[in-house]
Length: 202
Image (tube, rainbow, N blue to C red):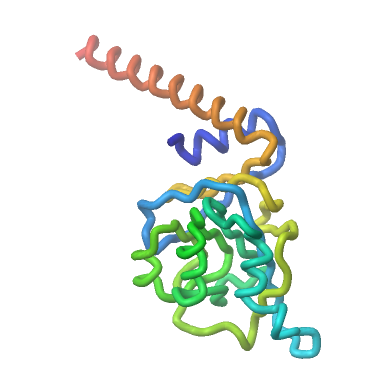
């Protein structure tokens, strides 16, 4: 698998828009998420508009991932509330049982210890111990969202590792991956030449 940096470099050759999200953390940073985005958007809670049958993680997760959740990356926008929990181990068991590849959010997560044991990769703004249901509500799914200034559309491809998150338009994923491989091959050649030159001059 190529690196996040190579994917971002490859994207820069095709698009002028920002495609990378920096500064997220993970309960298991050695895991990689790679797959098409399924999106969910949270909003500050308003009791007068919240429908408990709809504005909840479970129904919106099902709406976001559809009938085939396997391999998808759930992207949850916390809408400017990085310290609020969007989910924890109990809710995110749905990703495990559905075979999702990962979760990326600009909000916080609970239960890092439990999440580290789950097979998918999770990335967030940080860990919290507090439930956020009195401040934040899951509101809609399958819509464009933004994470730290990066627009994510349902179906975009998400790559997340310890260095960052890359967002790739679905129609470009093949070409971007191929270019990222070429970038890494060129970089490896440059590194080899530098080492050879240093050895020759020693």
